[in-house]
Length: 193
Image (tube, rainbow, N blue to C red; front, side, top):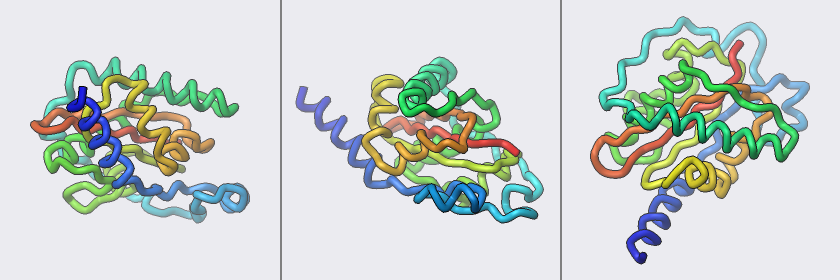
């Protein structure tokens, strides 16, 4: 029992300790009412840059990831519905981008929004061919139990909660990697152009 509590506490500390708010571009007329938003200038940014393929994840996507993604999105959608927000749909492209980051985090045994190649979420999303208007990312490392446990940890983190409740995102993809050590999990959320 003590080891379960210690593992849960360790996972929560790792999650909260690495929590950052990912800039989510929102038009200026909306951003003035959204304290965690940044505006996306018209005419192009990294979101319109030419896509270059991301390297394939170096660790396999566990078979349970597809079912877990469905369950995580259902949990996030229940949370969003409780706040009057629209439901997210699954995105294969966001799932591939999330999988690469989960693999990278699992390999390095860290919780990070920056890949080992130095790219942040916006760079990884663009490189992965996701033409975005808004993107956000939730990350975690360690035992999570199930979708309810994973989303519960993110709900306890103000930045990750804001990402899940962002009214601008419309789709999501989950990455999960077991590459020795603790499993890493990444939920990428976005709104395509």
